[in-house]
Length: 166
Image 1 (cartoon, one colour):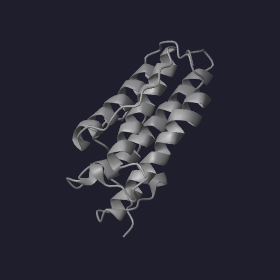
Image 2 (image 1 turned 180 degrees about the vertical axis):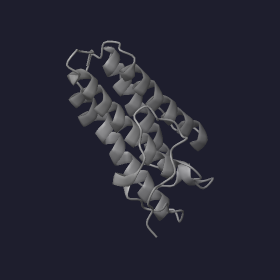
Image 3 (image 1 turned 120 degrees about the vertical axis):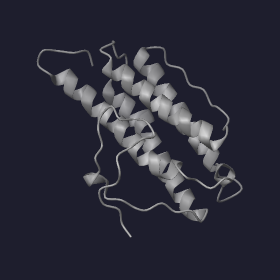
Image 4 (image 1 turned 60 degrees about the horizontal axis):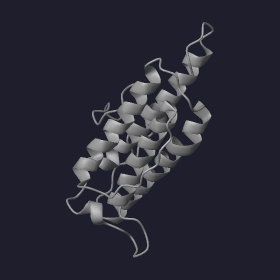
C-alpha cells in the first residue's frame, strides 16, 4: 500500500480506511449512552460479557496496527470501565487509520487487514448492538448505505444518522 503514480495503492488505502471509518461509525451507536451496568451484561453463563467483547474489539484494532507496522503482536486484555474501553476503541481505530494514511510502509496486505481484524470487529459491533437490545436498551436501526461515513473520521464524534428506522 505504498503510493504509486497510477493511484491503485491510494485507492486500496482509501478503501481500507473507509472500512475503518465504517467500523467507527457503526460502533458509535451501541457504544454511546450504554446503561451503567451494561459492561457486565451477558446473555448466558458461558457467553462473553459486553465489556469483554468491547475489550476484544480494542485488541483487534491494536493487532491490525501491529500487522500494518510489520511487528505483529496479539494481546488479550481484560475489560476496564465501559467509557475507558470505548475511548480505547476510538483511539485504536484512529491510530490504525492514521498509520494507513501516513505514507509509511504497510507490511500487511489490505485484504489480510480486512478479512481478519476489521471483519471480526464488525461482527462484534453487531453483537454489542444485539446485547443492547437484550439488556433493555436498544439502539435504533439505520440504513447504513445512506450514512455519511468519511475516511479518516474514526473518533466517537460521528455524523448524525441520515435515515434511522422506527
